[in-house]
Length: 436
Image 1 (cartoon, rainbow, N blue to C red):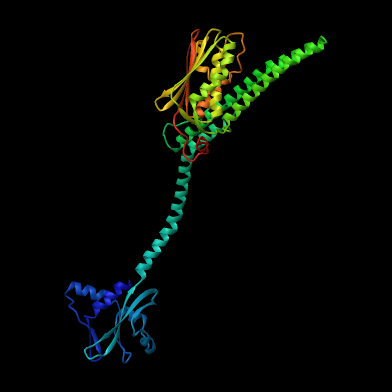
Image 2 (image 1 turned 120 degrees about the vertical axis):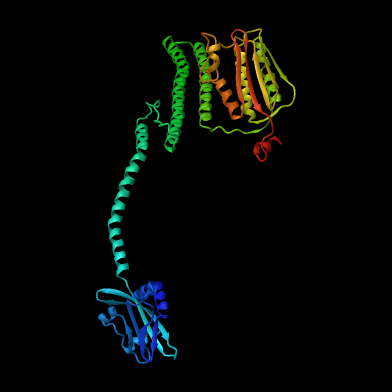
């Protein structure tokens, strides 16, 4: 509005003529452009003589409103500017412009525009806001609520399915819609977690059942021997025999409990490995030399074949236990006159340990299970340990980044093969420092 008033006042300068105290508008009424401009610019118009304060020119609209400036008001408006006045219920915006005639006489030109149209637009806009904003907010809230319900419906189904999964129903899984979105990926991640949880619970149940089974027999033997000794009033010599037999059972129980504890700690990841550089060939030769007397006592040939020095980064005590378990397993299942051979050689970037025997072998249906805990594939009617030794072998190999495999043929023999990464321990580790 102010820019428009400035344009009108600047344009009127060329049409207002003041001569000897009189003022008039000079333009060509036949020119439509001039006539239109002058008509719009002079709708609200006043021209004052600043020297005398006399009103020289005034439009009819302002004349009807009697908006004439006094001497004091005229002096205040002489500097120019903008002013809002109320006339006949309308608000007018007036712009004061200072003029000068050819004789240097000063005049004040006032040009105005009505603000009614702008006020009407603003009022209409306000009315629209008062109606549209609440309606828009309500529609947005309703739409957001509906969209939220649609978006959360799959989550609600997942929640309901999750509540239905319990310790006795670990076979159930969360539904997948097949869309591949975030909810499907979340449900798939939970299903994978439930798979691991189900496997862990199954292993715990199997572990508990196996422990109960393994401990039941020695406890029954101990109880039976004690009951027989008490019932028949055994002599001192017989009591010593019973106690000696019970000591053997106690020793077996102690070994079982220690093995169970080792497996539990391994499952919990609480067995630290004191890694250092280990010469695998030297380790095998030493253990074979230690077991040779036992092998000769059983009528078996035990030998070691190692060539180059092959060093791996690992815990020497756990690696020793791995080799001992394999050798003990081979000696136990090989008949008198047979042989057991331990070999260490390079297999590409890895060191390979093979323990081969000419024993009774392993049935084909038992091969996939020999590394499972508490699984025994021995001869019928003979108790051969608790079925933990080979499970420990696999855990030790896995903990050292290695692999373990078995090949066997019933009545011919078995060959266990363990591979471990070659190379020194990483620099900066305490095991590397211990290796020198």
